[in-house]
Structures are given as C-alpha cells and as structure tokens.
Amino acid sequence: MKIVVIGGTGLIGSKLVAKLTARGHEAVAAAPNTGVNTLTGEGLEEVLKGASTVVDVSNSPSFEEKAVMEFFRTSTRNLLSQEAKAGVTHHVALSVVGTDRLQESPYMRAKLAQETLIEESGIPYSIVHATQFFEFVRSIADSATVGNQVRLAPVFIQPIAAEDVATAVAKVAVGRPLNGMVEVAGPERFRFDDFIRRGLGSRNDSREVVVDPNAPYFGTTLGELSLIASGDARIGEMRFDDWLSSATTSR
Image (cartoon, rainbow, N blue to C red; front, top):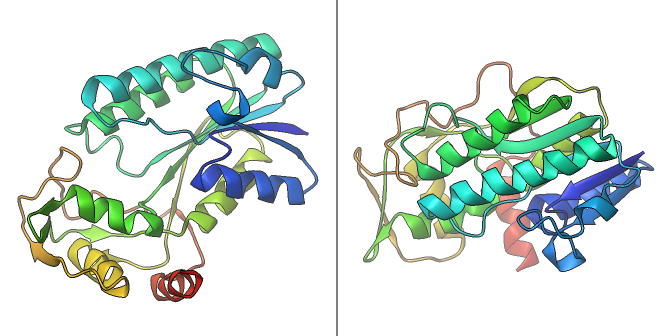
C-alpha cells in the first residue's frame, strides 16, 4: 500500500521509509526538501493521492512556546484536512512518553494539542509514544548546560534507539488503527544523570554532569517516573552500551 511519511527525510523518517519499502510498500518521504510543507499546505494534495496511511514523524524546527504550538496545530490541521479529502484510512503520529504528565513544558503542551486534533478528526488513528532517543544524548546535555556543568534531575529514564523506534512505528503503520496509543521504550532504565554522563564520556566530552533535583527538563519539573513508559510498553532490542559502541565505531 502507499504510505506517506511526513518528516520522511529525518532521523526516524528515513529509517521508517527504508523499513516500509523493504516490506514491499510504496513508502513516500514527504518533507520540505521533497516539496511538501505541512505548515503551508504546499504539496500535500498531490503527495496524498492514493495513500491509505499517513505517518507523521515531523518535528517543530523551534521549541519556543508560540512557535512550537503554531507548528503542531497548523501542520496537523492541514494534514488531517487533506487526508480526509484523499480518503486516507489510517493516521499514525509519533509522540512522547509522558506528554500528558509534563504539561508545564511548552513542547509537551503542543504535542498534546496535536494528539487532541488527531483524536477528534474522525480519521482512524494510532499514536505511538516513545521515550527519549539515544541519539539525543548531546542535545539533552546541551539544553541542560550551565557553564561547564550539565545539571540534571536524578530521575529514571528509559531511552531507546532510533532504529527501534522506527521498527515499532513501521509495525503500527501496517497494522489496523488502534484508535488509541501505544508506548515504546528501551530495554534498560538509567538515572538521567548516569545516562548523560555515560553518553558524554563516550565522546570525550569534558563537561561535568551534576545532580540537581530542581533542574528543569525543557521547561518542566520531572517526577521520578515522568520519563518512564508503562508496563504495557513495547520494548526495543538495542542496549545503550551496544549503541555507544556502534556510534563510536561509525565516527
């Protein structure tokens, strides 16, 4: 079947397109650099012709409060409107574990707004909540850096490899709509500070990781289990040490 992947040239999208193509589907990468812009609506009508499923793994280029809300509301409305016209029968969206628990964060409020639009659209849907990706070690550290210190709350985190996220989303995309949500997470739990410390250490990054119970995470305060998936989550295969080894080898 024809599956359009919004954000199909990014970290998750490119892996997802490859996996769906390998399964024999017509997977189409849709992104601004392929002529499709969900914010303006450019290219949507054309790319959705004949599509049965749309998978949205796109992300806002800005996490600023107004900009991120505008991105997810406008792009999702444009996408759902064109899907209804095209007769799309399954909308899949990638979101974040803890979205409903972390509403102090402007980013999480925007993601929840996206999910609400999807749920109220009338189009059969599936929402995949993923934990943080291994690949985001550096960007998370950068956002928490003050001087030469990375300040992080000593909460639990259950990160996952982008490869495993793409595998999970691909399975959902070719299945029946859940009309609900499923969670995916990595096979191990870490303390947040330990996860970042190990990630930075593998890159010979000299920043000091400091435990700070009051340290915010993208604008919100974390509880001990805020970033942990439920017991019903689908679990990825790759362990963090194996990912670090492969990432170090590829550099």
